[in-house]
Image (cartoon, rainbow, N blue to C red; front, side, top):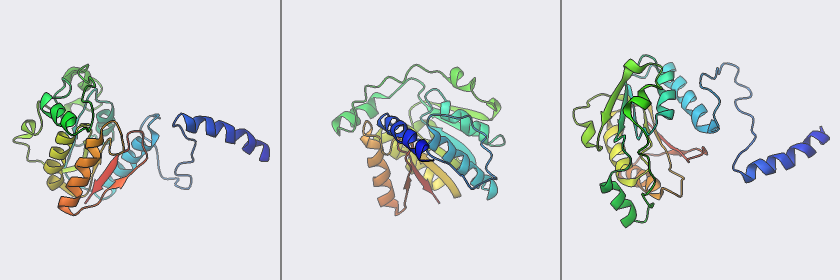
Length: 224
C-alpha cells in the first residue's frame, strides 16, 4: 500500500498542475447508473445527471431550456436525460451580440472578442437524440423568448456575458418549478467576470441562494 501511495502522489501532483484531479465518486451509492458518456468535465456532467434523477424522483413538471447553446454539447446531454420533455434552445447561433459585448468592455468583465460563430442550428440539432423535442429560438435574448410561457424544471444558462445571463435569470427563475434547477456556467471563470456579477446581483435582489461547484467553468446552481 505504501508503494502505491508513493507512486500515486507524484502522479496526482502532476495532474493537479494541469487542473486535472483523481478522485473517487459516489463510492457508496450503488443505485447510481451513469447514463452520460465519460467526459473531462466530470463534475458538471455528473451533477447534471444527479439533478436529473432528483427531478424525475420528485416528478417535477415543466420543460427544459438552455440559453447559450453554441455547438450543443451540453444541450445534447440534457436532451438525452429527459426523453419526454421539450427542450428550448436559445442562441443567436452567430456568436456574441455587439450590444452585450459593449457592456462587457465598458465594465471590464471580459474582452468579448471570443468567436462562437462557428455553429449552426442544424449542427446542434444533429446531435440531439430526441430531436423532435427541441424548439429552436434563434435571436437576441430576451427578445427571442417573447411568447414562451412554459414552466421549467431545468435550465442551463451558458451565455458567458453579464447582460444575457442577468436577463436569463430574470426570465427563467420566476418560471422555475419548485425543486427545479438552474445551472449558470462560468460563475467562477475569471475570463467572464460578468457571470458572477449577474448571479450575485440577481440573488441579492431576490433574496435567494446558490451553490458553486468545482467543474471546469465554475458553475453556480440555483434551485427552488
